[in-house]
Length: 638
Image (cartoon, rainbow, N blue to C red):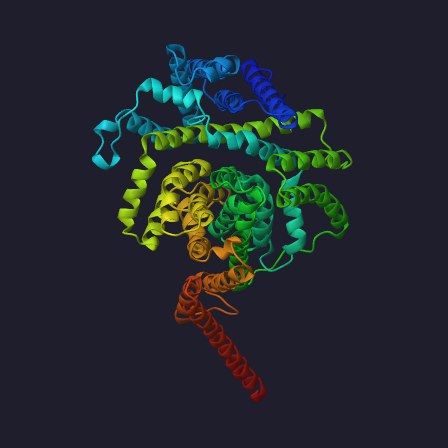
């Protein structure tokens, strides 16, 4: 989005873009000012962000809409009502905060009416931003809160009145303005603005070119560029679909050009980009809420995520390498030597701020402070970089883009706050815990399978952050009750929520990549599922061996790390059907079974799996040796 690109023949669109820019810039100014000089009370701090986000979602809808005539008039009327409603309800909290704070929970009719307006505007805005799934789930929870007396015994409660439910959501920190929205206002906003400025200074292009320098000349180089480049870009963008769109337009055509099939090229980019939400240091909005829910430092979360993310990308690297060997693909031509020095200079301007961000988080600085300092360093370094120096208009555009990326996340977590509030007030969380425990019959493995299915299904229709909040609230406590460490339980539901981006039948990451690759969406989705198989097994490993999440001593980390490395090697060979030569069905079965055994938490099973993979490799080497010997003898006879 830029501030001044509207056509002169469409004055309405110019007005809309000007309003978007004004709201985004003023909101950013408020939050950076309060980050430095001290925040206001939580209700004020969060209501300002929510009101701004709803406005930006409504205005963005009108700006992008191609509607004309009566449809456009109707849309503009709806947008105007949404903007007015959000401004009125957020403004009331700011202006009347003192009376709200002193009301001791007794609210009048005015507050109830404003609360109802705000909830309705929020649900409509979320529908526009993400579709119907999340608002409909929230409405179901609202109905449950209102009609609790009519529910079956195990789910029944005394029921809430409309006034108490709405006022509780609007004027307390137990609903819409609760902890999830607080995490966005206090932390996520600053990281997304930092990512926006990083993108404006050419991060996408630089990361892809850096990947080209590092791995482009290897066999199947373009696919490895996609793996490395998407991992680097995703580590700061935290969005699978955005990552596919940003890097896929460059990497997918390159992969097709050197010989990869269209559906495989799209699948590689989709899987690489989906890893963005599990790759430190940013990882998307959900991890900040996870840190808040677990009451641990953000550094604890990113350290826990590091090794699973490393294994995720190692598997993908193996797959594209073996596929390239199988198809006898070459790499790209040498990177132009004259560009190497300039590329390294450009990389320094990007990698230094990222290094500072990562280092400050590990040194236990607050994530917000780390993001602001890293942004300041990025801007200072950018001023001395003539190739990517941002002028005043580009700086404003980057800030506007950053705040616009915050808006949909804000409305999503606010709606999730409704669900959180209902679960807490009605006691539904305890009831659902009882139901889930009974359904699993105290079997942790069965509970994990049910959780995996629930996470993937919810993730198909919900943004990752909302999916995580719901499952962390309902299912993670059951896992903890059955002995799973809290951080492993939360990472489990988070992982499968992110993998929904590549899981058929609704796989937004795979579908986006398929559009770029010109391949069938479902074929691309199933290929994504196949090459990302270890990612679907990884959460089970760190539930049973939490050492992989950096919990415990070095031995607790090394054993599952070695096992998962072997498992990734075996699964890669089994899925591609190649390991130093094409492999038949019996050896593929050996690789697959050995990999699954290596993923198992039992040490004897691990050893047996490693031996089976070693045997599969040895058989292949013996066959190669015999083949070479026969060939040599034949040549000698001739």
